[in-house]
Length: 221
Image 1 (cartoon, one colour):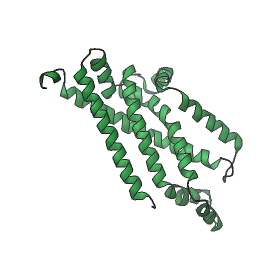
Image 2: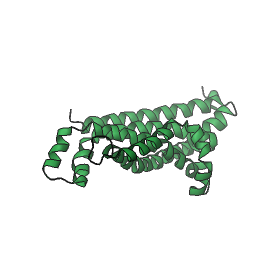
Image 3: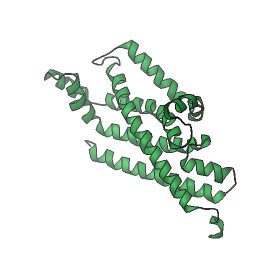
Image 4: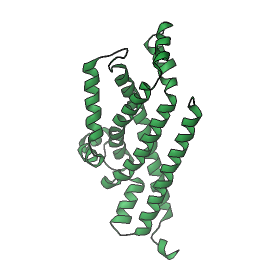
């Protein structure tokens, strides 16, 4: 067994793992910062809601659907000029974060909208009846009541980002995906491929288990 793992450089694997975690953390943070207001705006401007506006909702929905329907590998390539403009590079962690955010923020925004739609309408009407304004409705009713659903949405998005960070290795994004492609695929080092895949599986399982526990903790049920 030891001879089969002769191609492994554990220092390089550790560095690639840290790069993957860094990409995941940065892109997830920006995704939540962009996707949460986006989902909230889509909810508020939707039909029958407080700030209903068909034109705004259709525009936001169109943008979200277009970005969600675009394969991520194509988005990586299409965004090369914009990524270079924003970060000054298209390689490494800096070059991977902008397309990662662009690929997942619309997806997360749609999940946020869905989670907010699950909030009991009676609670919303009660807040309005007590004279609550839009800000109070959002901060004291909508977001707290949708907390479990929002955590579930973040969990699903984080797992999707693990997949996308691995795919970013195709264009030199760094991390475990880059390691798997350069050594596991291009140099036919199967042991490197196996280890990187196992690490990605462990990371995915850890995210899912942690998310499930938080959802159970904050759920009313």
